[in-house]
Every structure is written in structure tokens, then in C-alpha cells.
Image (tube, rainbow, N blue to C red):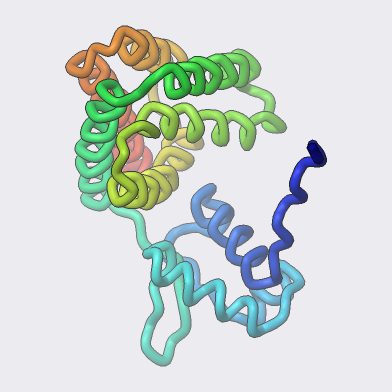
Length: 225
């Protein structure tokens, strides 16, 4: 049997510039309300005009970018009302997904969750080194994805992923303008312990608190920038 791993799919220019722009919008490298003109973007990222336009149209369809009639594109605005609404939607979707996963998840789901939490914990112990920020964010996403992965609802997972990505913009903002002490590793530990115990009510309560704290921090950050 051939055990050679399958090569990673090759991305075309449109896909590559889309991923770069999406990453930089979520991280705040391209800030809210910034005008996104094709020529400066083409020069900054070294891509052709057609892939840039395709990427901007795709990001507009996902709500990260706003297309203005006859005026091009700009990065979606950020506001207290927006993050509060996103936070409520994320809590609802995460709790729905967790409830189904805790009931449906078998040994494979549980082992994936254990592995995801272990990797997240290791990254959190290294937190403070800027080189590890991207790794921490990826492991955080994988952990939260693992919690809901046995929900058996493709639509719920798709909607949740979209809301998660938009809420992630605010998480980056709250991290850059942090006010007060927050023990995020302890929050993740409580979520994990409740999930492994298959305690739906407690897992949802801890997830809700975790998301709401991010929302509160983001609102504070918005008021101080």
C-alpha cells in the first residue's frame, strides 16, 4: 500500500491573496474602515489586479469588506454594538454545537479534544513571545472547533465558523488593548474539564463566560482607541 502523504493543494493567486487579506483584516494589520484600493494592495502584496479584485469580492461576500458603489472597497467597521451582537450569536451557536457534540461524540471526538486542549495548553505556557502568537491563535481555534465537531450539523458548523472569524477580529483588538487581568488558560481549563465530564450545562456556562469576557474587553478597547 502506498503510504506517501498527499501533497498540499496548490493555491492559485486569487486564493493566496484572499488568505493574506483575510488574515490581515482579522489581525488588525488592515484596520477597520481602511480604504482598500486595488493598486496599493497589488503593490503591497505583489499580486496582479485580477486576483486582488477576485479576493476583495470574495471578502465582501463574507462580510469582512464592504463594497461601496463607485468608490471601491473598505474594511468593515467595528463597533460595540457589532461585537455584542456577534458575542450573543457565538454563544448561541457554540452552546448548540457543544450540546450535540457531548451527546454524539464518541472516542474519536474525545481523543481529538484531548489532543487539541493539550496543544493549546503548551502554546499558552509560551505566551508572551510574539513569534508564537500565530501558533496560539491557530491552536485556540482548533480547540474550539473540536468542542463542536461532533454536532452532526454542517450548517451549524458553517455559520459558527463565520461568526467565529468575525468575533476573532475583536479578540485581536482586545489583546492589543488589554485592560485588567484575565486568566484565559484557566477559562479554557474549565471548559475542557466540563466537556470531558460530558456536563452540557456547565460546559455551556463556561463557554458563555469565556466569550462574554472577550466581548467586554473588546467594548472597553473600542472606547479607548
